[in-house]
Image: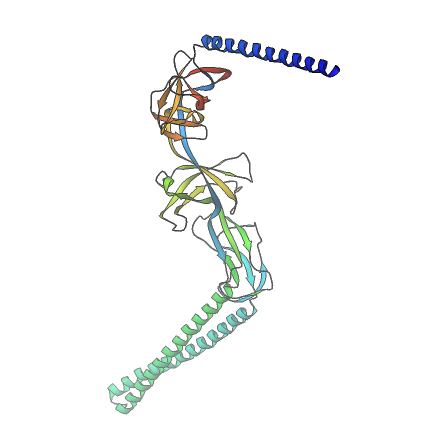
Length: 393
């Protein structure tokens, strides 16, 4: 008896739920046509829009580069020897002609003294030879006079002439030896001067800085072994490489702005000084050099820099946000908000300069607002609803 009552109660509950669901379905079925009639039977897409604008638009490229000195000189001695003193160190300022190191000069000083002594001996010998030559010359003149008077014989004259010629030759040899000793002394003095190592350059005559040091006092170095490097930081040079697509847009004198992590938020001006006429086969890129004045010497060789170059610019460009661009049927274009503000039209475009957020319009009539968000729901003539607070410039 209890089981029968329970079954009857469950049947009544299921029936009531079924009737409630049926009423809800019928009510909604009746409401949907009404909503469709209020919207005119057209789907409305919610979108965001932005204004079509005009103004200057620049096409920029940012290249990664490295700073290098505009000139670098490795200072080396012209002779071998032991380093007695190094007169400068890293970051010291030097001018052309300054001494930067001294080699042990004892051996070279002794060579100078020896050459000087040899010159003294040769000079004395030359003086003696001159005296003998003058005596021989006087004797010849005397014998010639006597021979003319018939007092001296022809044999005496021949002997005097022979002595004269011999003394003349000896004098010339002595004078040549003096010249040789003078040359030897000059050579010894030059080698002695080479113990005083100097930094000399002719381009950019201003002061430079010691960049690196390769030897220490007491080291024995061979001739032409670099002791240190001297670099010119005013101006400083930036080197970067460009691909083929950008190569034709660069030219000498073009302005470049440099940024480095060492000075965040700061920019340093420069200009393109050289563009290589060949491309590297391994990378298909060409070398570009930029010169910056670097008057305060804050930029240092070896720093990584980002070089921004304005490849081209248009002063009064028609432009739209980059996010407004979309594609339909293989064409690129935008959806332009119609004058009624409730629908859009598809406008195919031909574009030019593109930046991170703007694009230049070369062909296509644009004025007003374009859709920047929601294009996936649109086609030509689609009804729209502009989201409140979402109309941007």
